[in-house]
Image 1 (cartoon, rainbow, N blue to C red):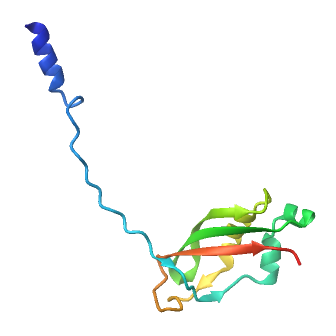
Image 2: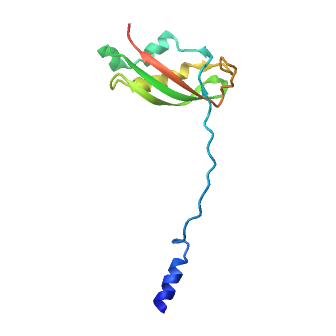
Amino acid sequence: MFLTLLAVALAATPDSAPAEPVLLAAATPDPVIADPDWVRTPTVEELISTFPVAAIEKGASGEALIECHVAAGGALDSCFVLTERGGDYGFGTATVQLAQYFRMAPVSQSGAPVEGAVVRLPMVWKLN
């Protein structure tokens, strides 16, 4: 009898009780700006200063695609690499560094507000 009561008491403890289902609100993804209106892009000097040195030495080319959030004033923030091609030269990291030189207009070319949205920035790194 004592074993039966102990088993019932253990079964009633919160640790072994079935968990209540938790409903999480679905996060609304930030809108992606497909048609940015760039009011500033990097200068030739800024492009050269961020080109991966090892790639320059080897004459290598590459590509990267990064994603950034658009901050107040059109600056790109919280950028990260989505894809990178062209070897281990750091084209993705270089594109993230280059993002600091881009600025967007307050609205896209189609009139959508950009602050708080996401923009994807493709970059082809090639020496001429």
